[in-house]
Length: 120
Image (tube, rainbow, N blue to C red; front, side):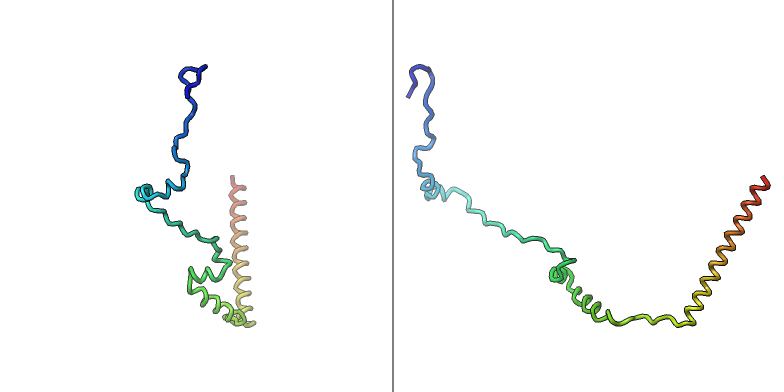
């Protein structure tokens, strides 16, 4: 199979003498020499957001059902009592007294800074 016009040139030859590849691969000689087939990995589904999906939240935190139940049951019930008029008046008076003391302290520091700047 040498070409006459080109010395040293030969036509490409097939590497395989037998073209029946599936028969070769499945033969006992080849199958006994190769590694066993790898088992396919199990893929997992899409990740679920536990803050939006309550079922996933329960898997992560089993106490979540108790928390939700107590929150729902306690929605209509107020745990603290409303302040009475006397307590509210006392709080307002204390706040007013505090405010006046803060204003008085601020005006004293302004007077001191003015007197220092005048003396210089």
